[in-house]
Length: 312
Image 1 (cartoon, rainbow, N blue to C red):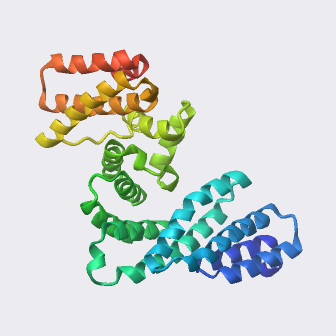
Image 2 (tube, rainbow, N blue to C red; image 1 turned 30 degrees about the horizontal axis):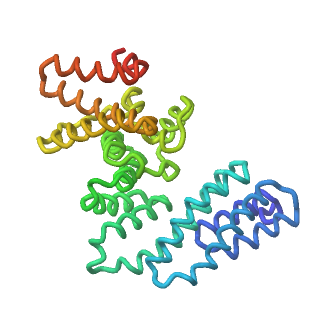
Image 3 (cartoon, rainbow, N blue to C red; image 1 turned 120 degrees about the horizontal axis):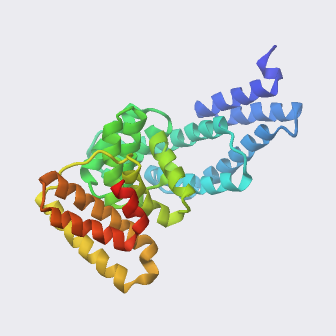
């Protein structure tokens, strides 16, 4: 049977065209499929997704330079999540093909800016290029650019989490665990969970959501449960200056918990996460057991349930 005369065959042809950045041919194939079955749910879904993106791409004319065009496309990807939530269903092959198409277009613009000169040291550009390569499934090149970006953006949760995600996708589990823990320590609110693809972090976020956490609170609780569930199990030794900053951060958060009760939903998990880092340090240097007990008591006071899970 000729695949061009069946709906499944035409859908696959459309997806193959999308992956090759040929949106016009993809639409032609989907229109043919619609003529065969005008109520086919996946065809309607794919056409809705294509229309959403083509409407956005028309607005690229408002962007002045290639960097702005690429940045606009990636910014729209976050809005696309909301669109998918609204229309329901979950045709993953369609989403994957759309992803390849969209990130390929963004990469084209960023490559124009990247060139072979000074822009290759721009951390923001390196991050965007790395994200695009991850989006099209080229994890090796994504790793290359994200590692370069992370050298400049050591305190950026988004960059570190993207680097962690790519390492996980490449099977570098130990490195990924360490980097994810780092990302959620330095800037949990900077991590875009919807942009994460690795099973490790996707499953962890689902488990934390099942516990009743969502939105900003989920991002703060994720490293706490990541530690308790053994996902963030790779630890590193703190440098003296880092230990000093950690203690200052704990002191500041303890004061905030007391003075800003309206924000405790975010402050408490953030503080607990820092207690975990401090406990790891104490255990690593074999500190006075009294300091360990004091820190554990603080956890017990602010969240007895977390304390019970920690001592198991």
